[in-house]
Image 1: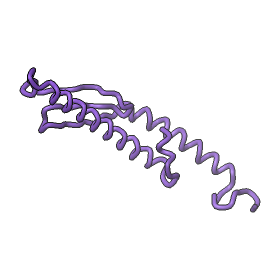
Image 2: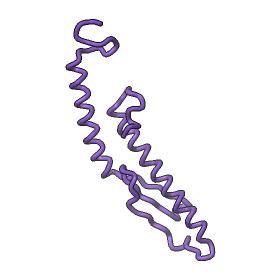
Image 3: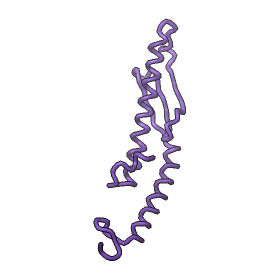
Length: 113
């Protein structure tokens, strides 16, 4: 091994540690920011809208009164479920995209958060 570094890492250990510490701080900051960001999903032509945070917490559900049919509760349940799942999928995409900006070429590292 060459003095002052590891093959394939292109730098000395001190630089690698500084980069890792910076990445960790950036990730902590981003996680805090993502908890404040939201995504919105609407299904059924606007019948049900769900807002979720980057923490994957549902913040609101809006149901248009005209879709509330006591004779077809199952349809409303399906719409709510679809909207929630779509909002959570969008939250996952948002988190993965933002983490990918920090982790760059480190592959699946963003999946750890």
